[in-house]
Amino acid sequence: YATLSAVVKKQPSVFDGKEAASLVGDLRSNFNTGRTKSYEWRISQLQNIVRMIDEKEKYITEALYQDLSKPELEAFLAEISNTKSSCTLAIKDLKTWMAPETVKTSVTTFPSSAQIVSEPLGVVLVISAWNFPFLLSVEPVIGAIAAGNAVVLKPSEIAPATSSLLAKLFSEYLDETSIRVIEGRVPETTALLDQKWDKIFFTGGARVGRIVMTAAAKNLTPVVLELGGKCPALVDSDVNLQVVARRIIAGKWACNNGQACIGVDYVITTEDFASKLIDAVKTELESFFGKNPLESKDLSRIVNSFHFKRLEGMLKENGVANKIVHGGQTIEDKLKISPTILVDVSEESSMMREEIFGPLLPIVTVQKIEDGIQVIRSKPKPLAAYLFTDNKELQQQFVQDVAAGGIGVNDTILHVTVKDLPFGGVGESGIGAYHGKFSYDTFSHKKGVLYRSFVGDSDIRYPPYTTKKKTV
Ligand code: NAD
Image 1 (spheres, rainbow, N blue to C red):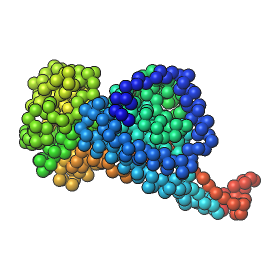
Image 2: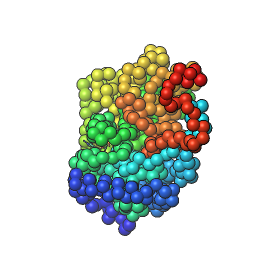
Image 3: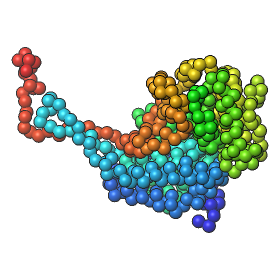
Image 4: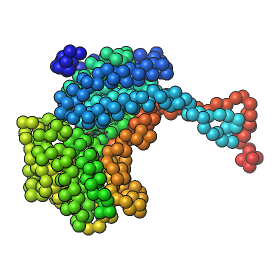
């Protein structure tokens, strides 16, 4: 393309219920021909995604900058290379994933054999969020294609450059008869949700998650809900302070400036240790983002003025400003908020009740480190929970007692990159999981198949039901 703006300036066209019905009808007729089921079709589409990423990396980076002023390296590591490696893995393992799995049979069916056969679900809908707008759109689509489905992607309108770039790239690189992007806001998404899908994969907040699940229930459509929540980091005093400080920063400000579903929402530590931890975080923050972080090119901005005002509103609530121990500066017209640390903010405040999703980091202090586990358990189950300690017993207790989508011990965020780990929430943080083979399984039906022959046709199961048969 000559420039990114040549691609993204176009307003998405109007898309209503009639068009949604016709789109799903077309995709379903195509799916019913069996086109998307073959190994060759799946591989060719996955290879096209890799080629698309390789050839259009520059535009993807630019769109992410336009939407979030996302630093180039962050965009590359968290979105572009991460998506590409998921796709490369699917290409490498697809044959194995598709192969029927032979399982044991029982004496009741002797002689017989049995297999679990993966079957595509049909026509699926992916709705994604704005904070990692490329990764969160393409990664589920990779799973849907690998599993042999037709798929419609609805990216977030809050990241408009990435949304329209995705629409353009998909139509250029992928099979339009079975893979489509529909851009839009609430009315377009509602029109899509009114259709009958074979699965809806939603990434976003719990409020909209409930809307999605309600719409899906009308057609008994299964859902994956990748939601968020307040992800805690519990920090013991036996740690390498510098490493912990760096990893907390990596899981907060160096991760989309706190606008991340598995970003650290709040820290819990002991009263005695809090000041040491805060000093270490301040030192590392300065070494990462300089003395004036509002000027740093290595921090994403807040996505839009709605979210800027929401975060500013949290800081302006009664008594909260007095709790700031670092940062707190804002520049409204640039949508910038500096890395901000607060201590012991009231549990009644919105900052402690709602997902923060921004650069504010409250620190909760407790008497004993074990009390931190109770603090976490008193809130809805988070998408991720982090623990920093060398104490193996505490590590075991944390893993056993903290219910969360996933857990990171002595690090933040990185568990999401392990493709053999399922990624998803529990309770208020979501339903279902994906990544690696879990993505393939999420978009497949596991069909149980029993094979028998005509030999060994025992009388036992047939009437007349004599007592003798019961004793055999
Ligand atoms: P959101 O729920 O506002 O929007 C998500 C999607 O839903 C968008 O595509 C949007 O267009 C659509 N939508 C919004 N309102 C709708 C409505 N009334 N009816 C139908 N569709 C509607 O979420 P967001 O602001 O884009 O993302 C932030 C949230 O997502 C946070 O809670 C965050 O934790 C969560 N999140 C989760 C993950 C994960 O992988 N689990 C990843 C990123 C973000």
